[in-house]
Figure 1 (cartoon, rainbow, N blue to C red):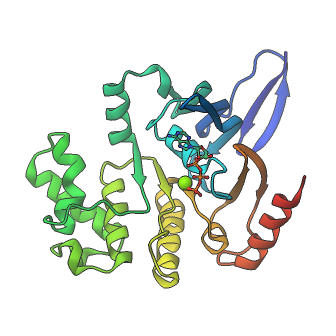
Figure 2 (cartoon, rainbow, N blue to C red; figure 1 turned 90 degrees about the vertical axis):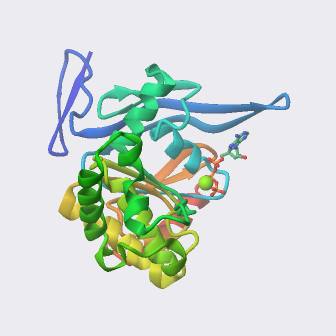
Length: 269
Ligand SMILES: Nc1ncnc2c1ncn2[C@@H]1O[C@H](COP(=O)(O)OP(=O)(O)OP(=O)(O)O)[C@@H](O)[C@H]1O
Ligand SMILES: [Mg+2]
Protein backbone atom coordinates (compact mmCIF):
# COMPACT_ATOMS: atom_id res chain seq x y z
CA UNK A 1 0.00 0.00 0.00
CA UNK A 2 1.13 3.56 -0.61
CA UNK A 3 1.17 6.54 1.72
CA UNK A 4 0.71 10.06 0.53
CA UNK A 5 1.58 12.69 3.10
CA UNK A 6 0.86 16.31 2.32
CA UNK A 7 3.30 18.73 3.89
CA UNK A 8 2.72 22.35 2.92
CA UNK A 9 1.15 21.27 -0.34
CA UNK A 10 3.99 18.95 -1.44
CA UNK A 11 3.19 15.26 -1.72
CA UNK A 12 5.68 12.60 -0.63
CA UNK A 13 4.93 8.90 -1.00
CA UNK A 14 5.81 5.87 1.10
CA UNK A 15 4.15 2.48 1.37
CA UNK A 16 2.44 1.88 4.70
CA UNK A 17 -1.09 3.32 4.81
CA UNK A 18 -2.88 6.25 3.31
CA UNK A 19 -2.60 9.25 5.60
CA UNK A 20 -4.84 12.09 4.60
CA UNK A 21 -3.52 15.62 4.57
CA UNK A 22 -3.40 16.70 8.20
CA UNK A 23 -3.94 20.25 7.12
CA UNK A 24 -7.32 19.53 5.47
CA UNK A 25 -10.16 20.94 7.54
CA UNK A 26 -12.77 19.25 5.31
CA UNK A 27 -12.20 15.77 3.94
CA UNK A 28 -14.98 14.42 1.74
CA UNK A 29 -14.48 10.85 0.53
CA UNK A 30 -16.74 9.19 -2.04
CA UNK A 31 -19.65 11.27 -0.82
CA UNK A 32 -23.07 10.66 -2.37
CA UNK A 33 -26.49 11.99 -1.46
CA UNK A 34 -29.54 10.41 -3.02
CA UNK A 35 -32.93 12.04 -2.39
CA UNK A 36 -35.90 9.72 -2.52
CA UNK A 37 -39.28 11.35 -2.94
CA UNK A 38 -42.51 10.05 -4.50
CA UNK A 39 -40.88 6.81 -5.66
CA UNK A 40 -38.21 8.75 -7.57
CA UNK A 41 -34.50 8.94 -6.80
CA UNK A 42 -32.34 11.99 -7.43
CA UNK A 43 -28.56 11.61 -7.12
CA UNK A 44 -27.83 15.17 -6.05
CA UNK A 45 -24.16 14.49 -5.16
CA UNK A 46 -22.29 11.54 -6.65
CA UNK A 47 -19.03 10.06 -5.40
CA UNK A 48 -17.41 13.39 -4.56
CA UNK A 49 -13.86 13.48 -3.21
CA UNK A 50 -12.84 16.91 -1.99
CA UNK A 51 -10.27 18.10 0.55
CA UNK A 52 -10.29 21.72 1.67
CA UNK A 53 -7.05 22.92 3.22
CA UNK A 54 -7.05 24.83 6.49
CA UNK A 55 -7.26 28.55 5.72
CA UNK A 56 -8.25 28.10 2.08
CA UNK A 57 -11.02 30.05 0.36
CA UNK A 58 -12.90 27.73 -2.02
CA UNK A 59 -15.74 28.77 -4.31
CA UNK A 60 -18.26 26.19 -5.53
CA UNK A 61 -19.75 26.97 -8.94
CA UNK A 62 -22.09 25.01 -11.17
CA UNK A 63 -25.40 25.18 -13.00
CA UNK A 64 -28.66 25.22 -11.08
CA UNK A 65 -29.34 21.71 -9.76
CA UNK A 66 -25.70 20.59 -10.03
CA UNK A 67 -25.57 19.76 -6.29
CA UNK A 68 -23.75 22.76 -4.80
CA UNK A 69 -26.17 23.41 -1.92
CA UNK A 70 -26.49 19.70 -1.21
CA UNK A 71 -22.71 19.38 -0.88
CA UNK A 72 -22.46 22.51 1.27
CA UNK A 73 -25.25 21.26 3.55
CA UNK A 74 -23.41 17.97 3.94
CA UNK A 75 -20.24 19.86 4.92
CA UNK A 76 -22.28 21.85 7.45
CA UNK A 77 -23.81 18.72 8.97
CA UNK A 78 -27.27 20.01 8.04
CA UNK A 79 -27.68 16.72 6.19
CA UNK A 80 -25.79 13.41 6.15
CA UNK A 81 -24.45 11.51 3.10
CA UNK A 82 -26.28 8.45 1.76
CA UNK A 83 -22.80 6.93 1.38
CA UNK A 84 -19.21 8.05 1.85
CA UNK A 85 -17.84 10.18 4.67
CA UNK A 86 -17.33 13.85 5.41
CA UNK A 87 -14.90 14.81 8.12
CA UNK A 88 -14.75 18.35 9.45
CA UNK A 89 -11.73 19.02 11.66
CA UNK A 90 -11.25 15.24 11.68
CA UNK A 91 -14.78 14.52 12.98
CA UNK A 92 -17.16 12.34 10.98
CA UNK A 93 -20.41 14.32 11.21
CA UNK A 94 -22.59 11.31 10.29
CA UNK A 95 -21.54 9.40 13.41
CA UNK A 96 -22.80 12.16 15.74
CA UNK A 97 -26.35 12.15 17.02
CA UNK A 98 -28.49 15.16 16.08
CA UNK A 99 -27.87 17.05 19.32
CA UNK A 100 -24.08 16.63 19.17
CA UNK A 101 -24.01 17.54 15.46
CA UNK A 102 -26.08 20.67 16.13
CA UNK A 103 -23.72 21.70 18.92
CA UNK A 104 -20.67 21.00 16.74
CA UNK A 105 -22.14 23.15 13.97
CA UNK A 106 -23.04 25.99 16.32
CA UNK A 107 -19.55 26.10 17.84
CA UNK A 108 -17.22 25.04 15.02
CA UNK A 109 -18.93 26.06 11.76
CA UNK A 110 -20.33 29.44 10.74
CA UNK A 111 -23.10 29.13 8.15
CA UNK A 112 -24.31 31.99 5.96
CA UNK A 113 -27.26 31.82 3.56
CA UNK A 114 -28.55 33.96 0.71
CA UNK A 115 -31.32 35.30 2.95
CA UNK A 116 -29.82 37.04 5.94
CA UNK A 117 -32.22 35.46 8.50
CA UNK A 118 -31.85 38.31 10.98
CA UNK A 119 -34.45 38.79 13.71
CA UNK A 120 -36.19 42.09 12.82
CA UNK A 121 -36.79 43.28 16.38
CA UNK A 122 -33.16 42.85 17.47
CA UNK A 123 -30.27 45.24 16.84
CA UNK A 124 -27.22 44.15 14.83
CA UNK A 125 -25.28 43.45 18.06
CA UNK A 126 -28.18 41.46 19.53
CA UNK A 127 -28.57 39.42 16.35
CA UNK A 128 -24.85 38.59 16.40
CA UNK A 129 -25.17 37.51 20.06
CA UNK A 130 -27.95 34.99 19.39
CA UNK A 131 -25.70 31.88 19.02
CA UNK A 132 -23.93 32.85 22.27
CA UNK A 133 -27.25 33.34 24.11
CA UNK A 134 -28.37 29.87 22.97
CA UNK A 135 -25.08 28.55 24.37
CA UNK A 136 -25.66 30.22 27.74
CA UNK A 137 -22.82 32.75 27.46
CA UNK A 138 -23.39 35.53 30.00
CA UNK A 139 -24.62 38.91 28.72
CA UNK A 140 -21.42 40.91 29.26
CA UNK A 141 -19.19 38.44 27.48
CA UNK A 142 -21.74 37.95 24.67
CA UNK A 143 -21.89 41.68 24.13
CA UNK A 144 -18.07 41.98 24.02
CA UNK A 145 -17.77 39.15 21.52
CA UNK A 146 -20.57 40.56 19.34
CA UNK A 147 -18.83 43.95 19.32
CA UNK A 148 -15.59 42.29 18.19
CA UNK A 149 -17.36 40.27 15.46
CA UNK A 150 -19.04 43.44 14.15
CA UNK A 151 -15.65 45.16 14.11
CA UNK A 152 -14.27 42.34 11.94
CA UNK A 153 -16.94 43.04 9.32
CA UNK A 154 -16.48 46.84 9.59
CA UNK A 155 -19.89 47.41 11.11
CA UNK A 156 -19.08 48.91 14.51
CA UNK A 157 -21.02 52.09 13.71
CA UNK A 158 -24.20 50.09 12.95
CA UNK A 159 -24.15 47.94 16.13
CA UNK A 160 -27.38 49.44 17.46
CA UNK A 161 -29.28 49.52 14.17
CA UNK A 162 -32.15 47.15 13.53
CA UNK A 163 -32.14 45.23 10.20
CA UNK A 164 -34.69 47.58 8.57
CA UNK A 165 -32.28 50.47 9.15
CA UNK A 166 -29.42 48.78 7.27
CA UNK A 167 -28.65 48.14 3.59
CA UNK A 168 -28.77 44.57 2.23
CA UNK A 169 -24.97 44.44 2.20
CA UNK A 170 -24.81 45.58 5.81
CA UNK A 171 -27.41 42.99 6.82
CA UNK A 172 -25.37 40.24 5.19
CA UNK A 173 -22.27 41.49 7.02
CA UNK A 174 -24.26 41.20 10.28
CA UNK A 175 -25.09 37.60 9.28
CA UNK A 176 -21.37 36.99 8.64
CA UNK A 177 -20.51 38.51 12.04
CA UNK A 178 -23.06 36.14 13.61
CA UNK A 179 -21.32 33.25 11.81
CA UNK A 180 -17.96 34.47 13.20
CA UNK A 181 -19.01 35.10 16.79
CA UNK A 182 -18.22 31.59 18.02
CA UNK A 183 -14.78 31.94 16.43
CA UNK A 184 -15.22 28.97 14.07
CA UNK A 185 -12.33 27.91 11.85
CA UNK A 186 -14.79 27.19 9.02
CA UNK A 187 -17.33 29.45 7.30
CA UNK A 188 -19.77 27.90 4.82
CA UNK A 189 -21.82 30.26 2.67
CA UNK A 190 -24.58 29.39 0.19
CA UNK A 191 -24.90 32.18 -2.39
CA UNK A 192 -24.12 34.86 0.20
CA UNK A 193 -24.48 37.63 -2.38
CA UNK A 194 -27.55 36.24 -4.17
CA UNK A 195 -29.77 39.04 -2.83
CA UNK A 196 -27.28 41.88 -3.29
CA UNK A 197 -26.44 44.33 -6.04
CA UNK A 198 -22.99 44.09 -7.60
CA UNK A 199 -21.44 46.82 -5.43
CA UNK A 200 -22.54 45.22 -2.15
CA UNK A 201 -21.70 41.77 -3.52
CA UNK A 202 -18.11 42.88 -4.18
CA UNK A 203 -17.82 44.14 -0.60
CA UNK A 204 -18.88 40.72 0.70
CA UNK A 205 -16.33 38.89 -1.51
CA UNK A 206 -13.59 41.27 -0.38
CA UNK A 207 -14.60 40.66 3.23
CA UNK A 208 -14.50 36.87 2.82
CA UNK A 209 -11.07 37.15 1.17
CA UNK A 210 -9.84 39.27 4.07
CA UNK A 211 -11.17 36.78 6.64
CA UNK A 212 -9.21 34.01 4.93
CA UNK A 213 -6.03 36.11 4.58
CA UNK A 214 -5.94 37.90 7.92
CA UNK A 215 -7.84 35.52 10.21
CA UNK A 216 -6.97 32.17 8.65
CA UNK A 217 -10.65 31.27 8.37
CA UNK A 218 -11.43 28.49 5.92
CA UNK A 219 -14.21 29.53 3.57
CA UNK A 220 -16.37 27.52 1.21
CA UNK A 221 -18.83 29.69 -0.69
CA UNK A 222 -21.35 28.68 -3.34
CA UNK A 223 -21.84 31.25 -6.06
CA UNK A 224 -23.12 31.72 -9.59
CA UNK A 225 -20.95 34.79 -10.08
CA UNK A 226 -17.55 34.50 -11.77
CA UNK A 227 -16.65 37.83 -10.17
CA UNK A 228 -17.17 36.48 -6.65
CA UNK A 229 -15.49 33.16 -7.43
CA UNK A 230 -12.40 35.00 -8.66
CA UNK A 231 -11.67 36.07 -5.06
CA UNK A 232 -11.22 32.42 -4.04
CA UNK A 233 -7.99 30.38 -4.03
CA UNK A 234 -9.76 27.53 -5.84
CA UNK A 235 -12.98 27.34 -7.80
CA UNK A 236 -14.49 23.86 -7.75
CA UNK A 237 -16.95 23.37 -10.61
CA UNK A 238 -19.83 20.93 -10.12
CA UNK A 239 -21.88 19.30 -12.83
CA UNK A 240 -24.61 16.68 -12.38
CA UNK A 241 -23.59 16.06 -8.76
CA UNK A 242 -19.92 15.54 -9.55
CA UNK A 243 -16.80 17.67 -9.60
CA UNK A 244 -16.25 18.51 -13.25
CA UNK A 245 -13.07 20.55 -12.85
CA UNK A 246 -11.20 23.24 -10.96
CA UNK A 247 -10.03 26.75 -11.70
CA UNK A 248 -7.25 28.59 -9.90
CA UNK A 249 -8.07 32.28 -10.32
CA UNK A 250 -5.08 34.45 -11.18
CA UNK A 251 -6.54 37.84 -10.30
CA UNK A 252 -9.14 38.73 -7.65
CA UNK A 253 -12.00 40.40 -9.51
CA UNK A 254 -10.85 38.76 -12.78
CA UNK A 255 -14.37 37.86 -13.84
CA UNK A 256 -13.71 37.15 -17.51
CA UNK A 257 -10.86 34.72 -16.87
CA UNK A 258 -12.95 32.64 -14.43
CA UNK A 259 -16.05 32.87 -16.63
CA UNK A 260 -14.12 31.61 -19.70
CA UNK A 261 -12.56 28.70 -17.83
CA UNK A 262 -15.89 27.85 -16.22
CA UNK A 263 -17.58 27.69 -19.60
CA UNK A 264 -14.76 25.57 -20.98
CA UNK A 265 -15.15 23.04 -18.13
CA UNK A 266 -18.89 22.91 -18.69
CA UNK A 267 -18.39 22.23 -22.40
CA UNK A 268 -16.25 19.13 -21.82
CA UNK A 269 -18.54 16.20 -22.69
N1 LIG B 1 -35.07 17.68 -0.64
C1 LIG B 1 -34.92 17.28 -1.91
N2 LIG B 1 -35.66 16.25 -2.40
C2 LIG B 1 -35.50 15.80 -3.67
N3 LIG B 1 -34.61 16.34 -4.54
C3 LIG B 1 -33.86 17.36 -4.10
C4 LIG B 1 -33.98 17.90 -2.78
N4 LIG B 1 -33.09 18.92 -2.63
C5 LIG B 1 -32.45 19.03 -3.81
N5 LIG B 1 -32.91 18.10 -4.69
C6 LIG B 1 -32.43 17.88 -6.08
O1 LIG B 1 -31.04 17.63 -6.00
C7 LIG B 1 -30.37 18.27 -7.09
C8 LIG B 1 -29.29 19.19 -6.54
O2 LIG B 1 -29.92 20.26 -5.83
P1 LIG B 1 -29.09 21.44 -5.16
O3 LIG B 1 -30.06 22.25 -4.38
O4 LIG B 1 -27.94 20.86 -4.43
O5 LIG B 1 -28.57 22.22 -6.44
P2 LIG B 1 -27.77 23.61 -6.54
O6 LIG B 1 -26.56 23.34 -7.37
O7 LIG B 1 -27.59 24.21 -5.21
O8 LIG B 1 -28.79 24.48 -7.42
P3 LIG B 1 -29.12 26.07 -7.36
O9 LIG B 1 -27.98 26.75 -8.06
O10 LIG B 1 -30.39 26.18 -8.13
O11 LIG B 1 -29.27 26.47 -5.92
C9 LIG B 1 -31.44 18.97 -7.91
O12 LIG B 1 -31.79 18.14 -8.99
C10 LIG B 1 -32.58 19.12 -6.94
O13 LIG B 1 -33.81 19.11 -7.62
MG1 LIG C 1 -28.32 25.94 -4.28
